[in-house]
Image (cartoon, rainbow, N blue to C red):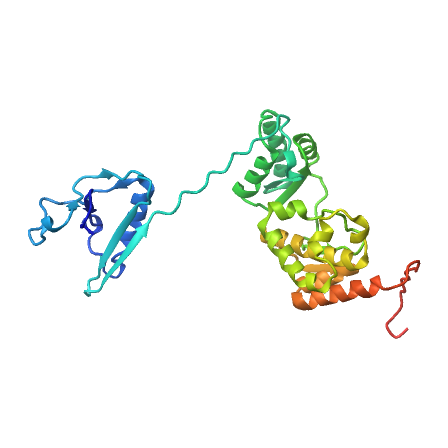
Length: 338
């Protein structure tokens, strides 16, 4: 390491700080060098009076770290070698390299009116130990937000859900801007209706809910939604006359309204929506569905594989598409034997 260098290789040891670490030899050295990289400082080695006479220091450009030294950036990653000399005589060596600097994101700011901009509906989550405390907290939050119009509703919602302890009494207010959210906070009162059964159920809708462009903004905003959408479309595209994304995000509304595409599109959207909500830790106990939504519920509940569900969705849509126009639907309530 000391050969062909303009600058010396600086040598130090963590053993001077904490002594021999036996089975952990090397681990402390790795930790020390990671911290040194983060802080841009090479820490000095303690208790050094003179270099060892048993080493030929003239054979290479290696010097002891008798004093702390700055470790500036030079256009290349910081690198360090860590040697571990175990008490049993086992030697190990690892080269560490500084991780790439994270790409700085453009800061987001609230709009002049303090609205949620294009983030859509924003939830503000409140919790307390009693219904009275919950209402009082809603009042305090309303006063705080009203006095600071520059705050972003989305930022407030993020802080409420990530930095506050979830207590037994909870409320969620929804709004697209600060005006709606402040009005909703005033409805949080000690005698507000409470949800008696905390179990969560998810209902998937049937044909008729499709619309052009559905899911496109979510696809661009959430990678987990995009992965799920792509996964479902990959199974369906070989079973449909045209790629599903091309139909859903195209400009032909009549084409999307065809049963073979409408049902496939709703299945893909519902699966991707569920995966997105699931990624945020939501775990329903019951899945329900109407019409094609039943297929979605069954797939997400683990009744069958994605490949089998896709074949059923495509076949169901194709068969219904083949029916003559002008028919009617009948709903019959009767036992199975009737």
